[in-house]
Image 1 (cartoon, rainbow, N blue to C red):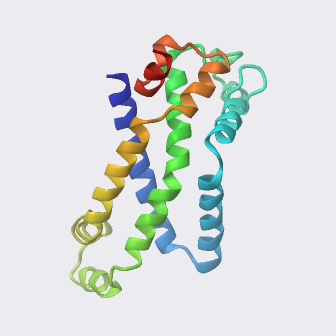
Image 2: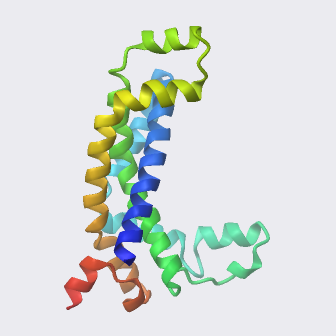
Length: 189
């Protein structure tokens, strides 16, 4: 059940954020789009272990930027807070890492699909008085439906077999039994 919930959360977050970034890429100018594309490619190219260790440092109990920022904003309960000692926060951190690594693929794939939709249909819809939301819901989504289907299927498969991120976080001081996903449980057994 934990694996199914983790997978569902990761897939939904990846699809929503990837779609928003793809829509943003579609509206950016050439130079800014190139900058964002390079950033996405660098995030995508980062090995899972390396990314997990960087995120682990950001959420570190003593020296983490996240704890420092939260305490600076007045959340005193985060002084020395250990993100890896609580099963929910460990799996939440693992989900952030998984989603962060998966967003580039989804965003780039959807951006490629968006570039194939003729601009004329959006211009005609705007002339007919369709709002941006209506254009997205009635024009963009139907054109990208086959791509969405493939991306959801791939994301589900990839997120269902997450191993490295949770394993590295567990080894860094997290708790194993309460945070095992199916792949980790099979590995231990």
